[in-house]
Length: 521
Picture 1 (cartoon, one colour):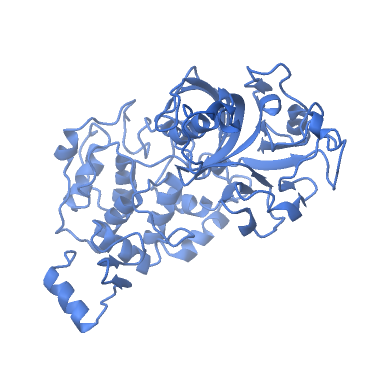
Picture 2 (cartoon, one colour):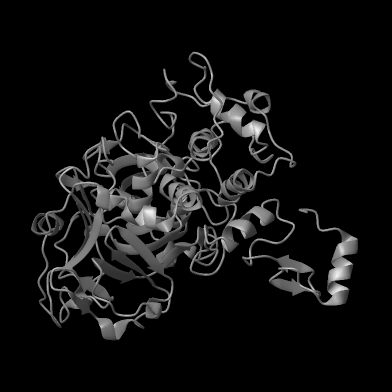
């Protein structure tokens, strides 16, 4: 039974019997199942516990499940196929495809590479007819999946589709009705295009897998009272697995506080890298409320984008160190975009006369496979680290938690840390306080940062901003983790073959740089 009654709770506690409960704390009356953030009274607790015990789902590195977090198409496909097919079938799927044909749209997808962690799950899903791609032939693994997309995959995968005569409009009606007939639509689903959470995903799979039909469920008519998905509808529900209206991950993430000021300029429709300008306005405690123009590069690493870090010098250097233009970093790494790296001692700063172009931050030189300033990971206790592996990003709030490992494509530490798990880590600062504008935090500078949300990377440049406003803008863009990079004359983005975001409050923008971050195919 899903309901844990008071009488049963007393009986269990009094008898000292766990009945599968992994954690009980009497003092706080905290009851958790397979994950510490999923209490037994969570609406999806039974489903999550069921899938965890079948090894269909697992938690994050910190042991949590994060049931309210949305799930993307790659993650959803992995979990669904894991519940439907044997591990041997999944592992062997890619071996059935000739390497010369592996990436054709007819067999896999042009945006799913063999080495990516989700490729084998995508392979079995396509082989079994669960997915067939978008109209342009792509899979779009990083897109957040919504309810009707999930409905089609689940009804086809679990074989609960009901034959219908003729074309059913709208295309998602039949899949919704089939799920409703199985009582498999959680009450938390409020509309057809609602982004699916990890908890809701577990609930739907659990109900279908166990054939549980005695729990409350939405119907098609319930959801039809809400606004249906916008955009073109499908002429045949057998052609496409998803509505064509699902926005990209990047566009979903910018709605909170920013709007594009013009059409996005995309390098390549399949590259996963996009440059845009956005009008942004921070809000909240410590914010000036001023509107800014932000230059933003987003990179979807799930689409085969690599993130490289590079430096002009490759050994210890104490002064007159080499530095090169940002464009040169792009060229020598066969890149498509780039951003300035860490702060350093420029030649035009008087106090840098004996340390020209040196920097003290921990950095990995990809071409030489060496770490610079490895002995200075304690250089600042207010900085953090991004580490880049092939098509994956990792964030370390504590730089020292990273074990030196050269099987990476990049690593860059910097100060200050701006966001951790979506929360601003700067102290709350009031720009109107006495003497505030004499503090470096409130100086108006061209500021830059690198950040991530999941496997999407962000390069952001904003002119004439103080540090609190800058952090709030990044938070409003739904970026999870972010660290500040260099500023003012050193601030630069390179996109679409030219420099972007040239500083508006300095007379000598775009110095030569001793290090940089590059995006490459």
